[in-house]
Length: 249
Image 1 (cartoon, rainbow, N blue to C red):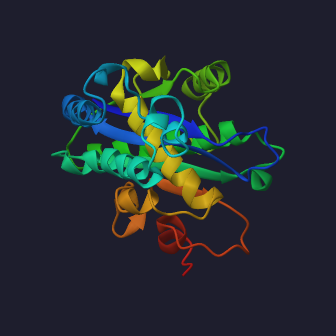
Image 2: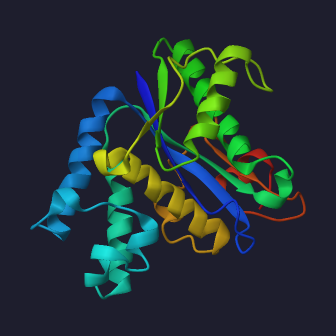
């Protein structure tokens, strides 16, 4: 089974922010242990006295909140984010990233959360269909941080399973998404860092973290499927989605 761990970044309600992000990592069940172990080892190196309680959250790490305030050098905190993101590159076998970046004004009055979730689900299902065609017959399960809009997403997921979505029917999801506490799994924390990297890239024009993972989104034949950037047509963009799908420089 492939599991897709997701978390979000950005505020839907804030008028000061243009973007909402939903993203994370898709990996085979046996790979979960190795990514978790890699992040645990990094946590142990950073905070040996209480590494199990240390959590990786980009919005805490870079500004220096909580424990991360004790690391006074911002460049050191940024390095820890990059090192955590690099852990996925050590995985063996098939894994990939998925992400949807939504310019909120471009989907109004539609809910950016619902738009992003539908896009993520359909792209994950398409990935699983491709695996089936390649004789890798696996099903999929989506796991989200329980602090995302749990009730709204559960209702939406139930509707997708029963009635389909605007692009058709899901074929390969085993159940509606599960919601877990980020403190219980390093994989949700990793998804948090992916979303933070995307949010910094698009909201702050800071690609420092995005550059670590920009080549890891699901793709086939030189076309990126796993990353979607919903934006105005007039806005140029150099992200992998816009360059391979929209032909922008």
